[in-house]
Length: 115
Image 1 (cartoon, rainbow, N blue to C red):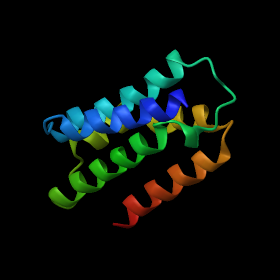
Image 2 (cartoon, rainbow, N blue to C red):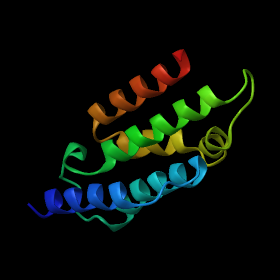
Image 3 (cartoon, helix red, strand yellow):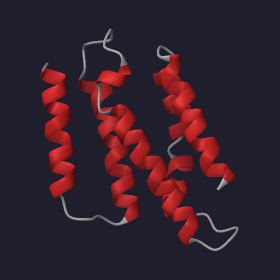
Image 4 (tube, rainbow, N blue to C red):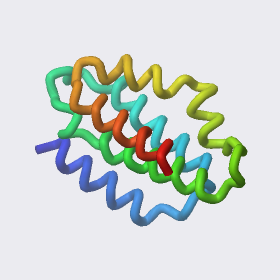
């Protein structure tokens, strides 16, 4: 019950927050994911009961938007951040316990590559 309340509260805060530049927004969502893993002690909760899927989706949307706004062959700051901070490797490590998350992450990044 508490996680649903925090999820609703998080969505309300995100809806009311002013727009951030893409990279700041991307980093915000990544830090929200890592913060969850640092602060949580409930290893049994499925990731679908957390805000993680929403944050991952936002990160993918940001990367997609950045890719569309760039000229072909240019790497944007969000993609540079993703590569420099080894986010994919970290997501793989964190998601090993929940295969459904890995599948969604893989599908999302595949779609980004196809676009």
